Length: 231
Length: 178
Image (cartoon, rainbow over all chains, first blue to last red; front, side, top):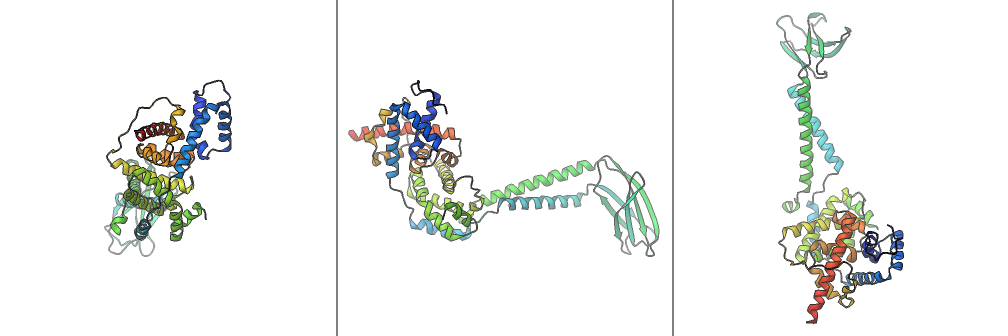
């Protein structure tokens, strides 16, 4: 705040800034620097002291007005409502619930729509007790993805590999093992992950939107004036 | 015990701390509400709402402002919401003249009855800033927090409210002389 220009008549923007501080100069809440600025300004503009004096009168008159004490029954009413006044959750808990909901919803959608490479097979002969699903990399290295125990009357099965990159081709080998541990049948299949990306994106986006909606819902629900309904 | 300490205890569900906080702040808040809305029944209802909100929201108090400022902000928002729902009943808008007509402040007009009458004729948002600055002695930063607006806006509102109050006081004094 520039108060070095003492030649003006008090109407410059700088002086307007000092004048704007008068109410707080009077109520005593200015810091030392601001107070010194106003004091210095008033020393150079004595005509403005009348304005400050008037504000002091206003301040005294305002403070002289008797404060109102709330009737006792207000406190009694507040106390009566306290047991039913719902305390909102901490913000982190709201977000934690929303994150959990989003995750569970995403898992539900993922499990329902299975946005990955789906392997389905039927067994018409022999009696395998176990199925092993391998993913074979380009260098021929096979990684076991799943080892499934099969019931005696089992005839068909499904396996979903959701951890695939869109656009890439994956080679799978499915082995069926009998009770003696021999491979009774196996099949190798190559599958391209073409439309996976779209499905996965849709599931993630839908889950995030649902999580956001549930967050908003929790926040709005906490702000509802429910205590009159519960009392 | 400081208000900050009390609000921390209120956040944990301590009812005795809540009672202490109510005892400390309710007269000022009630006075503010009463002067803003103009009738005791509404002021009492709003005071109840304010302190139930304090009870509920205490855990969210972050200490960015003082507890008093925070409670006044809640009170102000509730009063403004209530006032918005009411029909405007206070006819007002005297024509304002020059900005610094200091002599027009009329020292003899400064008595409590006239002041109260003049304040009642101020629009609520003008009355609010006058009450907060001169009645509650809040700093401009605290007033800005209560009103939820920039400090510059607070200063201009106070300036405008003072000019308006000055005119109203002059009108009240003129009526008294008749």
